[in-house]
Every structure is written in structure tokens, then in C-alpha cells.
Length: 257
Image 1 (cartoon, rainbow, N blue to C red):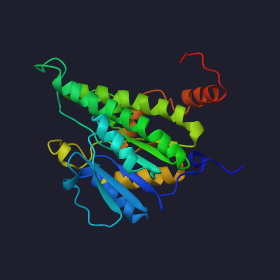
Image 2: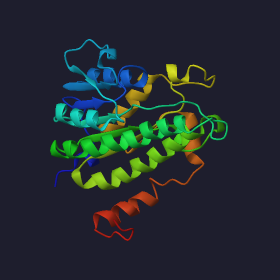
Image 3: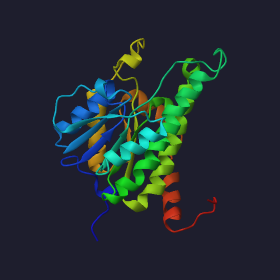
């Protein structure tokens, strides 16, 4: 029996990819890396499609706000041939829990980082399945593993997104879809301009991500900071989740639903 795509890895050469938040920083790096590795087409999503400035005939700029249900639905129609989805779009507003004057920043971070990612995954899961399984990549953060008081709601949203990613991996396994969680530390982009800690180049994060997709690896810890943070918590991917996967695949569902 030939292996499913998630067992053997998903090729980038000839792939058709969707990248959200593709107009700058890490998203732009993903688009460039996909093109360099031979992707057949890249749908580069951004709130304002004119902000996507990559001169390559294989790039299709898409107006895509992942918190807008109609925009997400339109993207699935346009990118019905997608084999790789990279959920990169995110929001970080650096709002503390207790000193914030209202919940607006926290709601925006959760709406984008969690609900927006969930909306994209739900919309594109059947597209990926119809096209052979493919890969879904969620760009998470070292903040998935611990919380900072000046960025509390962002950390909470990324922890929620990490949990979502692990659940998606279980549910999408049968369709042959590889689900990859990417946990970068501080990336050298405008979002971290005020951060004085060591930063990783966006191109390096993109390269590690595509390496993982091609190798069929479920998780990317991009740097020493992230690897150290992950060591402080139980290694769910190596211990808990294989058991959950086998029970789910066998139809043993004691959790309901």
C-alpha cells in the first residue's frame, strides 16, 4: 500500500498554495520560498490585494480578510485547486489583561488568530481532501507555550490556536492531510520592531516550514528559544496524541461529538 501524503510528506514542486497575510514579513517570505521551490501557483491573500507586490506570473493576489466569512468562502472558490494552505495571518496588539481599557484588542487577537484560522481550516479542509490531501500549515508562536503579561491576550489566542492545530491533525488525518504547527520565536519583521531579543530571519522560518511539509513532520520549532520553551511542558505530540490518533481512527470516541 502506498503511503498517504501525510506519512510521506507533501511535495512543494508543482503545488498550488494559499498563503494568508502574504503582503509582508513572514507571509511574503512564504510566497517567495514556495516559488523558489517550484510551486505551480500561489494565491497570496491580504486584506488589500494591491499590497501584494511580488512580480511573478504564478502569483495571484487575493483580497482575503480571514475574519470575513464571505471573503473566506470566495477564496475557496477561487483557489479550488489548492493543495497547500499556510495560515499565516495574525494579529498582535500587545495588550495586557488588566490594564486594557476594554476587550477590543483581546477580541481582535482571538478573532484573527483563533477564529480566523479555524474558519480557513474549515473552508479549505474539503478542498485539500478533494485534491489528494495536501498540507495545512498553521503559523503559531513560542507564545503558544507560555504567557507574557504585556501580551497576555495574544499568548492566549496562540495557545488556543495550538490546541486547535492538534485537534485538526486528528480530524484531517483520514483525508490524508498533513497538519503542521509552526512555532517561531521572535521573527525579524515590523511586528517585532520594538523587541530587543534575538530574532530569526523570516526566510529561515519559511525554509524550515517547507522542509517539514516535504518531510511529513507535524511540528516546527524554529530556534533555541522555542525549543527551550517547549521542553518545559509535556511532550504531547510524542506521548498523548499518538494514542488519541489511534483511538479516533479506530472509531473509539469516549469524548462525545
